[in-house]
Image (tube, rainbow over all chains, first blue to last red; front, side, top):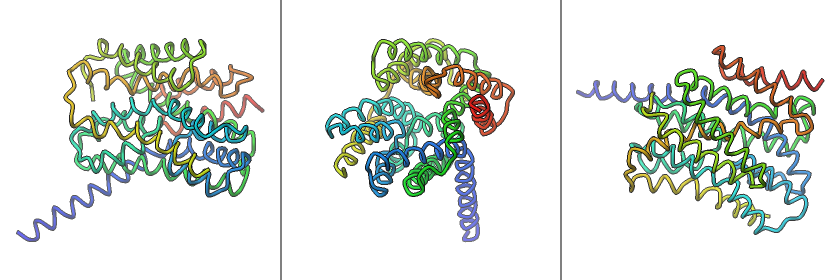
Length: 245
Length: 96
């Protein structure tokens, strides 16, 4: 029996390695989108008076792009700590809704995996992970999601540090053009789902309209996105009966 | 500064991690499951719009045009990396 056990071990090793590789490939578009934005954040944070260690530490500990940009701006104009932390909470509360959705899909996995995966959720890692429904059911799926999130995380931290150390290394026009990258990625994720199930478009458009109406009426971006996501999602209860894989 | 960073980290991490602990304790009725399953699509919608028009706040048509190009490329079935590169190229050319 001994060799058979070894075979299974070896097979499992290959499957895990394969999942890590697939996770990395799925994370590449996020890496492409994050790098220029992280570099820009690094440059901005440096100009706001943060040291390289501080701005990189923020990327390691907070890992939330929009909030970090906001922090760099608020620190530059001398906002108080309490106000900055409350604003961060409001802006990032949407991740609670996203995490609830993602964790509900990953019910089967151990808590020791759920905790690190949930901590790595951003708008981008959440949306890319969620649209890989198949992997959530596969054996060693956590290696796939772990690798995807780690790819994004490393790009975010590395880019921030680079921005802080090297200053504006990208030509301004190129780095500005790359601001569209994450939006294009979101579109690139949404369209294939709409092609599969056209009612997905209705859910997305209701979310867009809700977000738009609340933000033009002066609500903060954070709450407007939370409400857009919740109300758009509500319309999905009736529209998306079966969760097609 | 370090305490600002730690504070930001805590208020970001807690909402992210709480669901990991509570989903095992709760059994959701079917409609909540369907709601949560629709969340990724709704989140995508809310993240795309109206944010995309502020890619160049002084000229909103640039973000919209790049968005339409991205929709076209994605609809044609191109790999997502190419969709992203196509949109970046569009903005780059429009701001020449």
